[in-house]
Structure formats: C-alpha cells, structure tokens
Image (cartoon, rainbow, N blue to C red; front, side):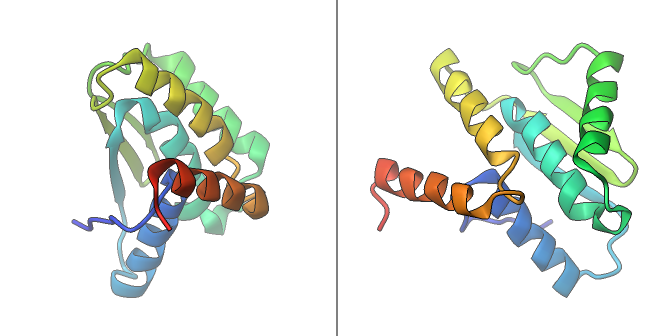
Length: 136
C-alpha cells in the first residue's frame, strides 16, 4: 500500500502515485486507488490516462468506458462504491459529509479531469487552492 500525501489535487496525487509505482514497483499488475466516493468518476477517468498509458486511449475512448460503467450500474455516491476496468479499480468511501462539499467537488472534478491536457490551467487551479487553503 502506498500513501501519497504531498499533492494539492487528485491529478497530482495520482501522478505522484504513478511515478512511485513505476520506479519502486515496476512489475505491479493491478492498481487499486482509494478516494472519497464523490471523487470516484474523476479519479477513475484520470487513472485511465495514467495507468493505461501504453494503450494510448483517446479522450472519446475514456469517456465511452466511463459511460459504459455508468449505464451498467446505479452508483450511490453517499456510500462505498467501486469502478473497475482491466487492471484498475477505484474504490470510493463516503467522506464528504455535506452537500456543499460534494457540490464543490463536482466543480473541481470537471477542472481536474483535464489537468494532463491543460497543465497551465491546472497550475492556475493549484495556485487558487494554495491561496484558498493558506499554503505558500
């Protein structure tokens, strides 16, 4: 089990985790990521980019995979949930205890899902978080 606690966003956390896995555990066959339940779709989408990089999935293919999972099952984000594809599992545990936190996470998710496509915009997001959280 690897704990990553230096990031300010889900994409940073997953990117750091991917680097740790590739350098320290290059033979790792399966990936299981644990996040707050309301972050599962975002984390799962980002995992498709990071951990299936040899597949070179297009944006459309990632959206299709996410859409297929969504249409197969009714997800209750207020309870524990899982999304799986090939060797990737993202497990969500309910941590957001207010609707306001879930709403903020929904907006952050839309921004963070494209962090790897638009690193300059993601940096603006990180800068905003640092200011909001009082981090220098």
